[in-house]
Length: 264
Image (cartoon, rainbow, N blue to C red; front, side):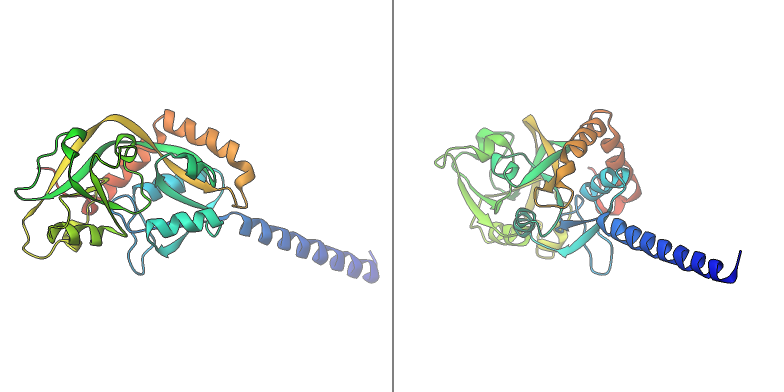
């Protein structure tokens, strides 16, 4: 091969490799998804200088990693801000959502778990709660824009009074101040952060729900991968049905006992 032909061959090869590198770079970029997260242990644990972890995050990353995607995370946000960002397409995904018609307007919902219990927090000497009927006539602190369970969310306005708050810190503040009777939440393992030191007046009541509700990972309909929602939905249903998600969450619990309160 002549020197001229060799030079042309090397030049052509460099050009082809350059194009391939560009294609790979763009392809790699398309494989990154942004998940909006808020600190709500043990479901989502967002601490300064650390990559977020938690039950929801373990299930979400497991699903998208199987599909070849890497999940990146926002800084700590409120849940209602995450919903707004998801609706606007500023993030691709969030996790830990219950179903509702309004959410299906802006997101594809991918099942990963189910909700069987709710936690109620009351002051010592406060109301006894063993079921939904015991909430009648009470003032209940509720996180703004967050679904709880079907019977609660659809209750008549006259059944109890909902006092909307932005976060759990505000919820416990109004409970300690006596402005509400109850705080309702999915199990929440960060009580020490929000209840004043040496305050032993708050107690937790865990209630098993009459009907379990599915929990979902939400994929924004404005995400760059929204057109693949059908495939994601099918895979999530398979992983839920064969208990893979359940095993992923249980593995997280075993590896991170520090984020769980000891059972008594």
